[in-house]
Image (tube, rainbow over all chains, first blue to last red; front, side, top):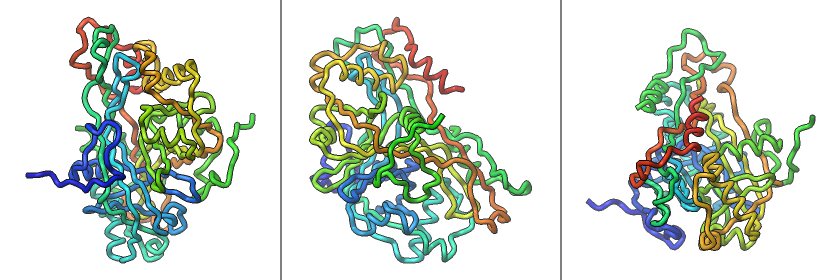
Amino acid sequence: MMACMIAVTPRTTLGRKPSRGTHDEAKIHAILDEALICHVGFVDGGQPFVIPTLHVRVGDGLYLHGSQRSRMLGVLRAGATACVTVTLMDGLVLARSAMHHSMNYRSVVVLGTAEEVRDREEKLRVLDALVEHVARGRSRETRAPDEGELQATAVVRIPITEASAKVREGPPVDLEEDYALPFWAGVVPLRLQVLPPIADPRLRPETPMSDAVIDLLRACST
Amino acid sequence: MMACMIAVTPRTTLGRKPSRGTHDEAKIHAILDEALICHVGFVDGGQPFVIPTLHVRVGDGLYLHGSQRSRMLGVLRAGATACVTVTLMDGLVLARSAMHHSMNYRSVVVLGTAEEVRDREEKLRVLDALVEHVARGRSRETRAPDEGELQATAVVRIPITEASAKVREGPPVDLEEDYALPFWAGVVPLRLQVLPPIADPRLRPETPMSDAVIDLLRACST
């Protein structure tokens, strides 16, 4: 079966080290799903800004949310083009030569224009999905947004149609003559570790532990 | 003693949730130093791009490097204004209400224009510092850049003069009436974990283990 590919445009044609790049939709989606946060690039008054925020992918849409008064969402809702980048750091790559040091990583760049989600039901589904993105199962353990919160929150959708992924994996690559050098070389793997939860000091003692947190700890300890 | 503050400009005036923000130079530097990578925002042909890359801070300069042929460095060296953002994810904040879910994080945004580092000695010092940023002590365990590598590599400096940090920490904050809800609430701490190193398959068996890696593992296991 052929992998589903996202269209290549002049803006997402892979430049440097194209061997690390892909437009495979399944790979792009998997990286977007694994990353907890993204960095959103936009231009305001000629100045680029890069802001970290939570995201969630639903189908072929990438969703962001925030206060109706947020500058970032204001610029995006006005129709400005954006760049959303997520990066997973997988390891430090220590080569024998200084210049061949690198990182193992998986990153995705999505270019596009945001559309505001105004439909009440779709907005609720996206806000649910954002909570699920943080911890699967958690949306069932919370009070859902009320009308005031819904009104105060803006949700935008960026279509994942112009996107590319870059992946570096595996051992360092040194110049052939450097393999004889007496320096250790290899990869130091990195991963985001989930530590034991800290209960809110105001938690009522009879409150049962969160199933979503139990599942998260279990998933991250394997 | 007064903390050293970085000047506030209209572009780095804190907008939403200013209580989370600071212009304290020591805090900004500490966050830049702890973050392994940054996300660089720049504009090319009207389109914003956000690219992950290694950085290092030396004094009040933020340094980036890459191939002379890199698009990002080409745009920056041409004098375009940039935004460099680093984000440390410290925890998932699980509130009783969906809309009060959040992240604990520390982030820094630096706005500025890059200057190319052309001085040979300064360039070597920065490339050394970049290796040290990945793993302290590692620059002594590598072959230093040769003249060809130096020529092929561009290094730029962005002054850390227009910058701000944002920090969220502590337990969730729910609406007063929601504290009675029967849902678990608290923080799930996150941290970047360093896993046991994987030697390069081409490593000569007699090569001693890297002291820098041993120190890194020791520092990260506490």
